[in-house]
Length: 436
Ligand SMILES: Cc1ncc(COP(=O)(O)O)c(C=O)c1O
Image 1 (cartoon, rainbow, N blue to C red):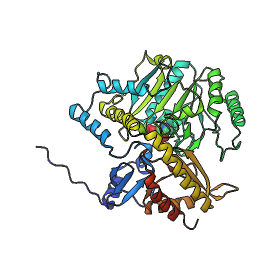
Image 2 (cartoon, rainbow, N blue to C red):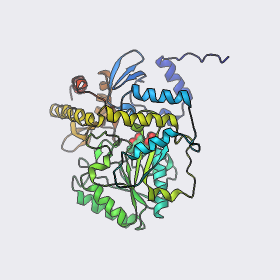
Image 3 (cartoon, rainbow, N blue to C red):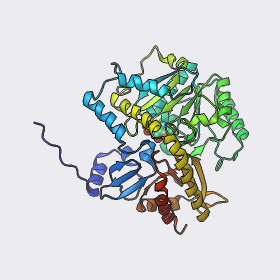
Image 4 (cartoon, rainbow, N blue to C red):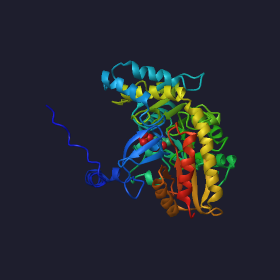
């Protein structure tokens, strides 16, 4: 008989000791709070730590928990699948991934022939999108936005425009970062034409003139909820296509109804990408990602293998099917729009009362506030943000500290956040900002 596992040790000292002793530095480094925060349980938009203390989750475990922690429909779908067959590697046939692909394609803009390649993470999907763009076009040069986060694998890291995530190794060649159209901090303010002229200059000076593609998040997530200015994506994509390239929309954070107005972030910009990358919210926490591409682009890989052992995992795809079903049945896109607008109003009131809040931005349940020591110079309030961030936790909120200067509080909760949660959120934020 198999002996029982050693019982779990929930003590802070035990967990810290084991992590310090056994985690590699690369996995230890990325921790938000001064004191460890240990989570034991979650239900919908709430989390509980090991002492039983409840938190309103405004982070959704890094935008992964889209429809709610331990959502009963998702759990039941995964449980049913596990009981039948835990894993079925991509090379064998199974109905769950096949049907999920069909359901996902049904969410894409009509009038195009879409196909799906499942992966286990966003970075893996970004890598595949890059290979697809280069293979399809026969070109090498790729453009990406500064301040973008696309993942940690070598390909995704090379496309990432934040130095803290770029390692001192030879990253991929042929990738050029263009200025991101940031209305708050960008040197051209909200002058779309000036950013597009700069885009042209980068193409002219840094590339061969022929492009494989351009990747962008319609709303930069980790970069601090920076929305592409209206008109920018359309102008940039036209320029890329004129030079033979394709547009890759990274919907890892903005997709699945999070922005409230649309199911996909790119839909707000009147462009249809050739390739769409998705992950995180697609699986509500189960490891799943996907590249959804137009068939004529994806077919370029038909003569080689791009094999992901867990790509079409029936467990993860069962979760994905349930997520789509719940977004629809629970009206979560409309909820993101309505509750997001009300949460944004909470943040605007916070700005009216606290000088340190320099900017409030975002849409739906993809929101952020940027903290500055001086609203005129916009100097980043990095230390103050660290202090306020610690307080938000003490007052029962989980938010994220983001941006290159770590002075942005990002809020990307499960899409089931309720209006009834907002008074508690506002009181907790107000208490956290006291004195600022
Ligand atoms: C916009 C975006 N793209 C890609 C990724 C990479 O996803 P993963 O961490 O699943 O590899 C992330 C992760 O934070 C992301 O935010």
